[in-house]
Amino acid sequence: MKRLFVLFAFLMLSCAYLVQDVKAQSEGTLLIVPRVDLDPSYDGDWYFDMGTTSLYTLFEGNLTKNLSFSVCNHWFSFCTDIDDAAVLYRNTWRADEANWVNWANLTYKMGNFFISAGKDYMRIANFEIEEYDYDAHWQMNSMLWNSFQVYQWGGRIGWQSEDEDLTISLQVTTDPIMVRPFNTPHPADYAYTFNTFYEGETLSLMGSVTHSGLWGWIGAAGAQVALSDALSLRTDINLSSFCRSASLQMDATLSDSFDLIAKLGFERIAAGFDEPYFHGNHLYGGVACNWYPLHDSHDLRVHLMAAPSVNFHRSDDLGFAPSCLYLSLGATYFFEFNIF
Image (cartoon, rainbow, N blue to C red):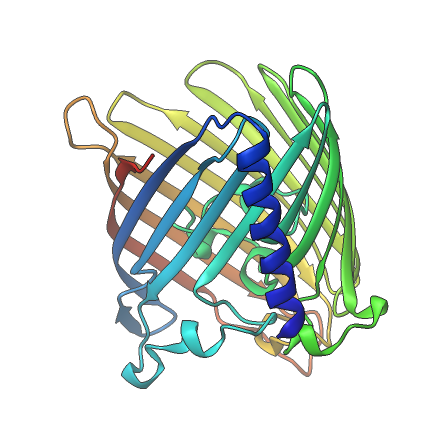
């Protein structure tokens, strides 16, 4: 706990100094994102719940020419048990569970170099991890996305090219295996990620190597190509001792009011993983359609999703895990405000 307050004090003092010493070019916007879902699923019987009904805020901008900030909060999630409605807040100081702070960090840029500190997402090279939580459909994503708590405290140092199309960085964070991350200061208990990311006009590439106390070594790579203004393809590959997966996704803009997402992925999950139901081979993915009903605005998004999930166990003693069909009907609204 003391280390956390020392980190915040250092960041705030640095921020105050820079604001006084550098001509400020401040700009800050606040995005408020409520999402409401109705998610039926079928695995031999029908089940209904409120799915990923949630409330997020994203506050980000520049404090000076070189100093930027980003804060994303997860204020509410639907829970099937009303007694667990405050689980995000009970998990505040945990690294192995989701809580109400997705990230909160400052980044200072010096020429082509930058340094950031605070809470951030681990730069594992997956396009699905790059997505904001309020945009993603967990039923279509890999076990890495669903099981690995990528939002961790730490720091990142890196280099970016002049035109900002190439970024290379090294990140050190608390590890998702930690229950109380600030009580375990040994260097071996932290996670380390080397990441490189190239973003061109039609082609984007990323790759990373991560060492985590729970997952061991994780190698990841992603590629995205824009075939036209309305169509793009992307692929993600993950390799670790617990899970190996690969996926292909198509994003198509059908009109100003409709987007279509189609995804297919395969993963092999080793015995010893925390979720025994998923041991073996797993097919995941689905189809989702986004509709923007407001004229000349994408502030309101209505989605319809269908995601089949097929699990094949390799071991006879585990048997065959039942397949499942996930459906989702929901709406997300984006309220954006200029704060300063």
